[in-house]
Image 1 (cartoon, rainbow over the protein chains, first blue to last red):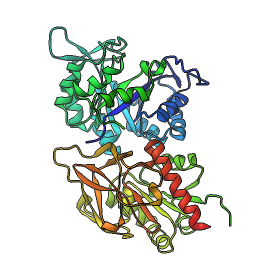
Image 2 (image 1 turned 90 degrees about the vertical axis):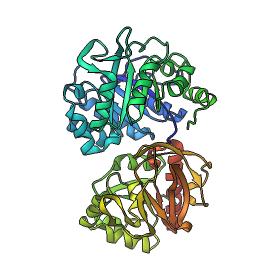
Image 3 (image 1 turned 180 degrees about the vertical axis):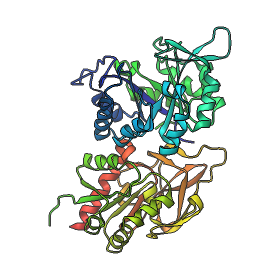
Image 4 (image 1 turned 45 degrees about the vertical axis):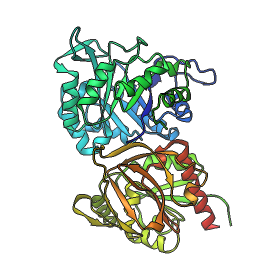
Length: 253
Length: 211
């Protein structure tokens, strides 16, 4: 059984980290590569870059980011956002990314998952799912556009199962209800998906305190836990997060 | 004799992320040439054989590009050689992957599918590295240090060639070596500081071999 992973996530807009950072010793708080290298040095197990650039006319910016990251970061990293084809994926993987994340493009055309798995192997394909609870029910709607638009006819657990069957190697599962709240992961959602798919699940959305990370693994059944703001704002270091997970009895790197 | 690290040749047989391997070596102060030219391998002071993908296809590409002979000749001449992941598996006699095929035959033993009942394959992620024997490659690496794996098959080396192991359902070969022929099943270029240390160790060994 691989060790449970801690994954800082960096939101990228036009090549820059969106959420500000408050590290005193970082020269350029908006430079994703500088931040990524710091996370690597602090013991992050993996990194996710989420490109939220509104216009996807300039794919070269994110490819350049992948290339610069591969120059300075020596842990696996995923590039998500704006990957719509095998060619898009090829460009960032050739640049040095280890995996690609697909979300809305896979919902629009689910065959994309299989095409990516065929060419690059399932280990390269992360399907990201943004889910929102249906009030009063144990089911979750799938959303796109940063949670603004519900996808008709798609339930999150069923979509995760289908994605795995189509060749996804991993599910990056974000609770849109919890994202930004700092109330912790949606553990019911995480547990439902983790129990339903035979592939690793990355819990995402809502981490505000260190104990939320361990809960994602122990109660949510996640194989990896993702967080953004608690690291970016310098509130906690990766090392503190790892220590909290270890103290909860989780075998981590 | 110069103490300057030799320029490694990273064998390009069209599979795997050569760029990440080259950048990791550069990060530890080595110079690296990525090449598919048999002449560059024949003259290389040290060779790295990376690789991601399927064994039979990889061997076909290596043969097609005329790289097998310079690699075997280099190994026979004592040139330091490091296989990474699939590149490590290719050092062995054969693999059972996709119906089976012969490897480079530089290390005795076969590559077989991991026996991991109830566990996920491919085995992807960080696992503890356990030292089985002393090796220049793992010098300064703590016993139990986690390293990053992506594989479904594992080599069954001769006992004396097993340098470190890891576990996924079964205990499998994670570092192997005989003389100057070395291999890691994990990806040192993706294993953080510990991985970089092992690449630096290889560069040091290659520099010493040349002096």
